[in-house]
Length: 503
Image 1: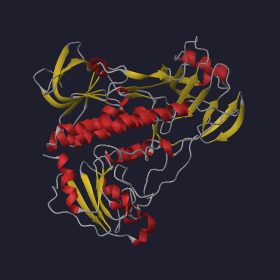
Image 2: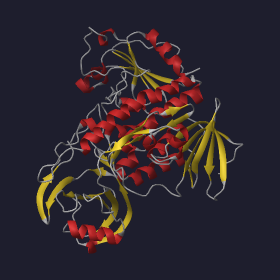
Image 3: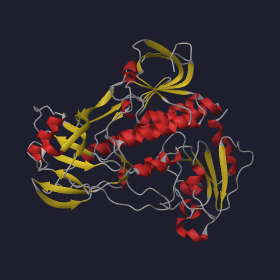
Image 4: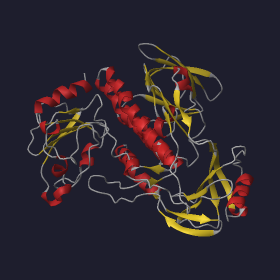
C-alpha cells in the first residue's frame, strides 16, 4: 500500500516486533484503522525472546492465537551442567507449577521469537491487516490534532502519513524516541559481550539445556529450541578485548575451544547477534500523541525472560485505551493512564531482570536462584493506578477482606463456571466484563457494545476453585486487558465508573 501525505490513519505503529504486532492485532479486532510499518524487509529471524510467561500466554489467549502458540512450542528442558567433557548432572532453571483453575498456564512456555511473530502476523492478516515492510519511521512532527510521520519507502523515496496517534515500537535505537528527544536512563549491567546465535547442530542431545559455566573464555550455553530442530547458543566473552565472531567459522572455533562439541558438528548458523546486557528505561512513555512501547521504552537483560513479555503487555495496556478513545468516544485524557500504569511496572521488572542477571552461580553451574512466580507476570497489578476503584467496605482500612481475594487493580483470575466454561471465556474479546457474584444485583441499562454483564451463580461442584469462592461477594468490572477496574457492592457505582470510557 502506498504511503502519501493525503491519507489519514487512526494509529501508525512503527516496528513489527512482538510489541507492534500485538498492538496491531488488538486494534484490528477493535475496528481501528491502523498501519504497521517495519524497516526490515522481513520479520525478525532470530530466537532471541524465547520464553513466554504465563501472563503473556493469557494475553495471547485473548488475542486468539493461543492454540498456535501451544502447538508450536514446548516446556523448558532441564539444565545439564558440564565440566569440559564431563556431565555434572541436571538441575532446573525454573520452579515448575501445574496449571490451576485460577491460572490456566502454569509455567513458562518456550517459543522462538521468530515463531511468535509469525503467529501474530498470521492473526493480523486474518483480521484484515498486514505489515508494510521496507518502510521506516525517520521523523515526526505533531500538533494538537495529529502526527505527521516521515517515512522512508521500499523504493528509496520518502513519504509522509498523517495519523491521529503514533506508537513507536521500533526498539531502543529507533527513530521514534530520538525524534521526541526522550532520554533513555540506565546502564550496561555487564561489560562482557554475549554472542547469541541459532544453529543447526549434530551430535548433542535435545533433552537438556547444556551449560559450561567454567569454560575458559566465558560461559557457553546450548539450548534446544522447542518446536524446531535448532539450538540457541549463548556465549559470554570474559575478555572484553575479544570481538565475538558469529560466522560459521567463528562459532565452530568457539565451541571447539570451550566445549567437547566439535566444530564439524555445526551444520549451519541461521542467525547471530552480539549484545552487552543493559538495563535502561525511557524517562517518559508518552509525549503528546506519540507513545513509546516495548524496547523503545525499556531495555532488559535477557535473564528472567522479561523483555518480550513486558513489551507485549505494554501493547495490551495501550490497545484497549486507544480503542475506547477512537471507537467509543472516551476523552483523550484516558491515554495518560498508559504511562501512569506501565512506567512503574517497567521499572519493577527491570529491577527483577537485573537482579536475576547478577545472581551468582555455584561450582556446578546451578543458578543461585530459580525463576519463580515473580517472573510470571501474574502478580503485577495496578492497585495504585488512576483507573482503579476499590469501593467494597471490607477492602478499605479496617475491613476484613481475605488476603487471597483479588482487589481492584489486580489481574482478574480465571475460575470454572457452573454448567461448564470458565471466566476467561467471558473475558475474551475487546469488551469490559461485569461479574455479579454472591447475589449482587446487576445495574440496568448498561451499553451492550461496551460491557458484557454476567450474573455468576455458585458452582458447588467446583468448591474453592469456583468463581464465587475465588472472588467473594460483589460486582467486579473487568477491563478489556483482564484487570479488575472496579470492585463494589453497589450497582449504582458501575455507570459512573464506565462513563470515563465512552462518550
